Image (cartoon, rainbow, N blue to C red):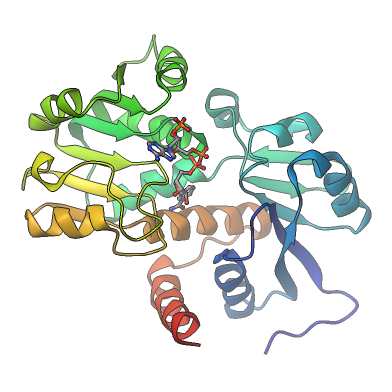
Length: 285
Ligand code: NDP
């Protein structure tokens, strides 16, 4: 049981929509397991009410909060300072309220980096990255350290181009290409990593690329975590690729946020087991 009393510290997630977020399950479990008198809940804050939302959180003495769609970029306006990685990524997903300052961090890229570390991957040759939204920005920041080359494909080419141009002076070669099936197929042939950072697959039926584009030698990482086994991952599995689902990134980014708020780095394998159990229970309830 979570104890709630006059000294309970409050944390939350702001965004829209937030109803299906798994963060309260993860964070409340972590607070409980580590003996903190703290709670975590979600607050729906619509796009044009972010300023009031942030003022409200400060007035209520919320100690920290996560930020999701559509506020990850706009939140920057209301922060006193940000970590160095945020300057390049341009998006914040975790805020610490020190009492007189709001400090912004990005733990999404840590979620990606620690997921690869966990599976023992520390170097890739060529990566095909699908998507150029908020998540893709964080992914690319993590990939810069471990890939020789990244090809970004995005439905709206200008977004892919803008993202790639931020990495013009990087050791990792980053190129934007048009979202055309024949070009994606060609780039996939000699790539050893495919990352889906689009929202395609969330409906449980769509896949961003056909099964035949996947070679059995690739690592395929889908950021989508609901459903856990997306059509892309199930195709990749059938082709013999090494598959990684989005839940790992979610867990690792949450662990890093928990560390920013509490100074404790939690054990992630225990969170996964608990979360999968809760997801099964939620789906059948
Ligand atoms: P954004 O809204 O910022 O970006 C969405 C991306 O998906 C854009 O690149 C968009 O392209 C692309 N896209 C959407 N629909 C289509 C389509 N029909 N065809 C082609 N491209 C499409 O969202 P985020 O970047 O924040 O999130 C992307 C995904 O990553 C979501 O599924 C989200 O749940 C997941 N995610 C997972 C996390 C984790 O911890 N596992 C963390 C954060 C996100 P365009 O630019 O053309 O619109």
